[in-house]
Length: 352
Image 1 (tube, rainbow, N blue to C red):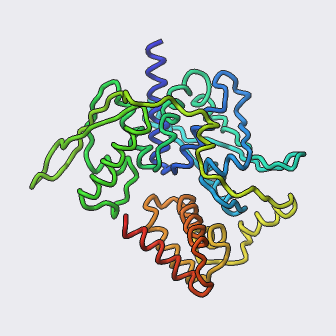
Image 2 (image 1 turned 135 degrees about the vertical axis):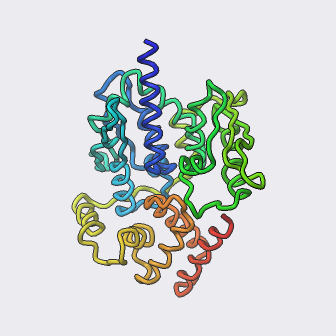
């Protein structure tokens, strides 16, 4: 039994490491956690999970929902791949999910269904699922992908109580870009101290840290983490409580089935406006509603890349949508909207 348990833990760690290496966004990690909370780990027939579309909006942090944004989000979920190493030195690769369906029922209510891939089923059902399901759920209230990744990195070593990581490896595990937090003090304050406070306030573990190996002039070459149980941890949220805590989205106002199919085609291969790249097309259509010129969209694309270090297309789209919503509150004149939006993003970049 002990051997089976250890094998389950190893597989669970492999999955979580893969999710980190694939740069799963905070919203996607939350969605995966909620998917696991909705299945019955002892009944494989529960593999298809249905969400009211309004709940999906709140889980993913969407305000106003449009077809381009919805399609981009579900496509991203369907592309998440894990690689499970084999004893021979090879590996097996597969996606977590295989099918997503958005539909309207007889009561005129919109829903989304998602189905796990066949190869991922052993990781999600039976006894194995309970281990990484527990870890992800405890991190549900964290506010950034960095914080979730830090939680997962340290949670694996809770029983040992200590883990030392080279600074470069830590940056890679956290998904920190090479040009992000290049000064140690910024990395310490924005990442280490921020994660330390967040885990203490919202998860079942907490940590302290100190310099490990030192280089010339006292440079930090590694970080030693001391991990322990968080005695102040509050009982886990229920799913309904978590969803109710999220900002109230705008009402879901989806179009008819025929219009839906037509509009999804417009945002796909036959998109009428070409802004010059796949990312620019996503941002220009799904986030900016084709309001700006191609040159302006490319400028906004470049600024958004700087503002969202993860480089994740869906996270960038969500970020830009939120900035547009914020701009709309101030309602600048039409001819000043592009300049106003640029300045908002530039301020975000400067504030780090």
